[in-house]
Structure formats: structure tokens, C-alpha cells
Amino acid sequence: FRGDDGVGARVAELLAGAQGPELELHLLADPTELLHVLDPAVRTLVVDAVCTGAAAPGTLHRWDGDDLPSPDPQPASGHALGLATTLALARALGRLPRALTVLGIEGRDFRLGRPLSPEVEEAARAVAAWVTGKATVDSAPP
Image (cartoon, rainbow, N blue to C red):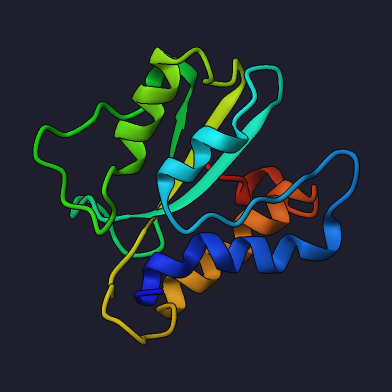
């Protein structure tokens, strides 16, 4: 992973012990892998790093259902298809879950071999606590 781009994997690592009938984790290296695991009938949470440049590192961005980000015609992504484009494709294929939340965690450092920045690590812990119900309302993602 490239620094803060590994935040989704970090959240999965923090949630690994919480798996059960109510929580199934999928660690995906590329957004297009979502097309193989999305189920329209299953409530889904996607956590990924974002770089909007409009917020401080560690800021949580939340998109639900029809408010998903639109694909950028010239995406800046290290993947063949970025997350927004993959979700648009899932919608077109009828694979988009009816209950879908995307949490984007604003990253700062995306260089190869770098660890998560402290703000992004803190956000990952807050997301994991929220998913497991251990977070207060004040610490839940917006």
C-alpha cells in the first residue's frame, strides 16, 4: 500500500475480530473487485482513502445511496477504475446495494512504503469503533 491509501486495510484489520453473521469483511486491493462481492440485498459499507484536497487529513467524508460521488472524467487514481466509476458501473449492472454507505478518509501521504499518517490512523480507529457500536454518537462518521 501507499501510505494513507492503506486505510481500508487498517479498518479491516481493526475489525477482524468482530466478524460474524452481522459483519463480513472483504479486503480488496482494487475497487473493481467490488463488482464480485456486492450484493444488492446486503447492507454495505465501503471504506477507502480519498484525496479531495478540500479537507484536513483524517477527515471523514460520507456518501449514502443516491448521494454517491460522481465519476470524474479524468480521475486521479492509482487504480484502473476508481471507486466512483466502479460504483457507477455496479449501478448500471444492477449490483449496487440498496443500503450503501461509502466512508472516504482524507489522506495526506500516499508515497510507497509509508505508514498511515497519525490523523488517518485515528480516523480508522473511529470508523472501526463506530462499526462495532463502541463509538458514541459524537464520534460517529458524519
